[in-house]
Length: 291
Length: 202
Image (cartoon, each protein chain N blue to C red):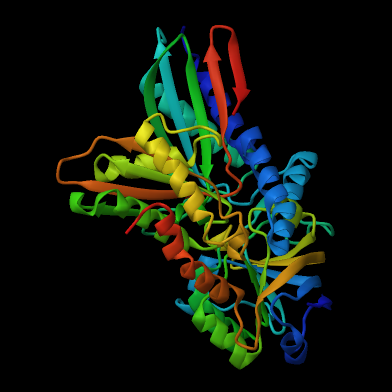
């Protein structure tokens, strides 16, 4: 399969706008489930407002949240796909910039020192473009995540040591949820990276935070930790928006990687209740949009 | 718990009536303010031509569309999506907003901290919690972008919105020293040991 870069540019534009307007079905049903089971009256009202907002956004074809985030594009290239890699990155950047100017969207991206906003949602190293490979035949998938800052500012890394064991991981996650309080726009998906190097650990946390609800860590140990931590953080009573209640997190998601004999790294990256993502899949049959 | 419909601006007495867990709906004028706006106003000596006395400010940087100025769009901007950002980053600006500009209400999400609580108590102010991330809904409460100042900071300009039935918003920090965030944070911290024990952490 040959990939047409003009189509990639269009998809990159379309994906940014779609992600900002339509929540994936797993997140929508996740909020509805939390609203049904919430026992705190204030929290139930807040969750009800979040549900109402989803339908207002759909009815008005408007953005769910004003935070257009830092744009992230995760590209997965399957087998027997012919694509100019450098051109692909340029096309994604162009599509991202066009979405910003043509919709228009708020450009939330500034230079880290001068704070200058180019009004394009782009800058040095942004959009973030991650490229990976899969064994799917003749398939190229682009996932777009507009990562909001309220939840992104709730990110932490701890280089724990082996003697602290798995208790260090559990304690760290609970303490991050407490520290974050209402700032990360709960109910959240608490993304946790366990293992790897410092940078890989943080990347794993981001992958975990942006995984669909209902998915499990493919590492059995990670999946066990997910279950225990999901129950634990939801005992804290932080609640929606940090105003108390049962619904602190949809789930704790964990991704793991092997690490060094001397290391025990753990990272947390949170995703807010407006857990937005969109996906375009290129195959010889055409382009399919989904989540 | 009472509900109040308030026409902005308000005076100190009206602000001091409000207690945590009361709800309010605002009408009239609302100002949008953000990190860069306040960094420029309070660290870099810039002034706004707007009179913020007695008003509410909301922690926001909106999505807008540039249009030809007209009676419907006097500032040359049409609202696209206007929502609320996390307040805690702007903690140190609460006091100068109140003491230098007379702001009475701050609308945000996630809460403000101890210095703001002290400023609210001393000077007569409140923090009103909005549901963060519910921006599509919030946008329907905004009738018009009436004016904009410090627009070189766009989207972190100082915005003047005309609002209709903006709310209900929850009083989460009042002028009597009570903060729901402090109370709930303390309660959550009190559950930490049990949460860790449930996972077998010693």
